[in-house]
Length: 383
Image (tube, rainbow, N blue to C red):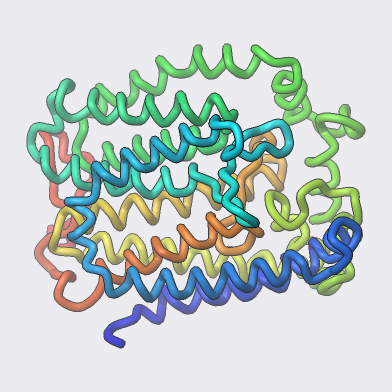
């Protein structure tokens, strides 16, 4: 079967296994009430995990360099999928947002695929432009235009969380690639007024922002999710209440098996369980950075950087929301939350990482080579 990175494989499989168990624990009561069986979400998550494992193995053996010729087709396909959400009969809405496509009995979330396609496109484009990245019209503007297309389609859903993640990934990859800081920092500052206008343009967003500062002042409405999430962590203590014995998932904590599964873990597995989860994620990020550093090929190094950044950013945002550090935003926790598209894309991404890190693509001379006039972030292992 070839080389498999055990140090990367172990935490991914560990998190996926924990996710299956905790999805069942968090959703059994809800599933029984809605579908008449408490195994509904468990069965689907287990099937997603099997499909994800097959995707991991498949992409581990798929030469990642072929993604170079697939960069633009994948980008166009992702845009088509995001646009198809608004076609009657294809798009599926839930919770006031149209974020899914429905095919038969399955739903697909195009934003997950769009994230990976953007990473592939950026990796190809950054490597191709090389030293010209310091040029505003070559290294910065084209990538921002592509990001703008995705942002517009995501805002229409609306899915502000995916916009933030996609923008953060783009910023990180352009920074690593060598785009000038003088181009990147002003772009963030220019976006702040638009972000403010967006936040205050709807009453529920204003309330959500106010509840972020003090959720206990709004325990019955906008602060409800954070209050019950913090209560879950508080009652978990060091050892936790035990798997299946959590209280907040019983119609108190909204979306306990998706957006707030980390809160359920905190209540049922306690501080010990939370620390285990953090260690598993830390191992994944560490291996991703190592692969990016030790890869001879720049395209592979950028691809590894993008994939690792995407997982890390999503983990930080989801955990930040459940702990009340960030405003409430609906985002899944990689490998743990219920969701087929998310699990499939993340497992496939790990397979790509393994393919990049396999013997023959790792070297000691260079990783992400210094590009552009600034040489922002040298991941070179030699000097």
